[in-house]
Image (cartoon, rainbow over all chains, first blue to last red; front, side, top):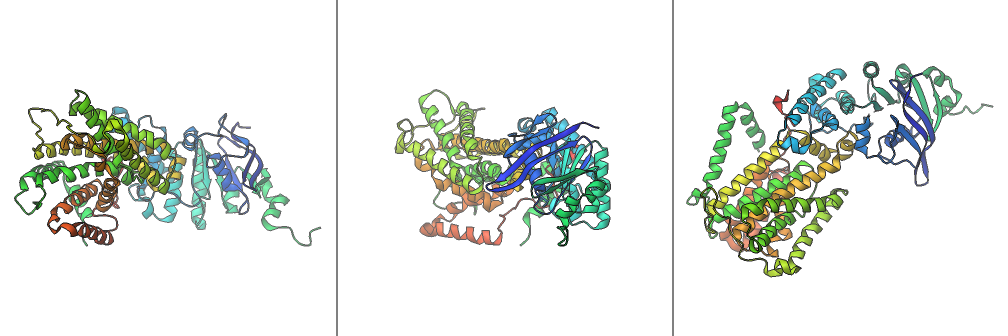
Length: 258
Length: 339
């Protein structure tokens, strides 16, 4: 079995009296596509928010790449190797697609404001390298031709893909995708599934939230199911589909059941 | 209404390198020749035309460029910008009268003082956002003025008098009534500020500020050290304000807390908004107009502020994004030749 990249240990997240996540434990293995599913309000996006440091967990521990993430600043978590997309698209609309990705690639730059101001060679070199890298990522995701268009003027599907390219710009080890297929038609979903597998094959680890079951089941190596903030299943897609607790969570219990 | 910004940008982009240098030099020549145009329609009745060019016009332009880094680039509403102007001016006033240092030696000290106070204000204040930040900066601006008003060493309400003029440099002499010399010196400072802003705008800092302005949370989650870049914006804005302050004190020879009221902060903010937040040429144009207009219409005496306000209201209704708004065209925060 491959080694694990991230472990969530008994992670609990409470908002006042509401428990959004309760003792959630699972690990993410290197170079796998882990699907994270559950009915609305199950706590999927909350998992993303605690991993990326948007919320500080109430108790438990999140170990990423051998180090605890708790209390770490958000941009440092990104720098350590976790980057995400957003369920409701949050691109920087007044920047071009390329600039959106470059802003993320800036994460690992050594040169900052001062060397930029005086045009030190290191700044120029990094700028050149990162511009090439950003274009490469756009091409990789298949939206290279939109590089110079403002993000807000892009078609919806391209914006969704740009979100992924931007997150990859931060050179993460772990890529968190929050409903990347929302609003896609079946053909686009098939294409996206291929892209996600391509991303994994390029060496990334993917944690995927998605509502479209057929997509999740098709691409995931493993699936974790949440319901009311608790983990109710963690297995291969095939086994999860047949798990009575999962079926119950999604469909409810039939009235005449025992 | 025709879109001046796009027209201008189009002309600029069609030019080759030579054409651009030509336009830049032409613009600079016109700006440098302004003091000689006192006999034309530009003349300001009652007020001395050349002195109006120095203060308020050139001084406003310089400060508006500085404030634009904070408000236009990074979207941080700073209502106490006058504080940095005051800190620069008082540094000049104190060191100029109490020590042997001359204006050129005090200039970097004044800038450093303003930057330092930018950090002092920025580090606690920039943890807040939006309206709350505006309120804190508003308070800071008033604190600086009130400290100056009450501190014996700063001359209380009498202020500081007999501040020396800059000593001659490169054979150019600064007499207190040789306004055009001051104007040209300010022009050099303005050029330097433009260079700094344009330089920063096309690289990492420009992208970081732009992303912070548009969606700060997303920026932080994608690895932008937002706090650091917000403090930098504050500090750079402060440095320009401080430089303006040093020069102002050395020009007027006398400063008092009354020169540094909230009204200045509001006016500079108006220059930025009126001209077009985030667009440096718009901001400059806004500052020139707002600096010039009150003195141009001085002949209608009492009604002039009323007319001034009316012009502002009408203009902001016609062009809510300012005279030359921020670019909405497809142009880059990435240098074209970077690849």
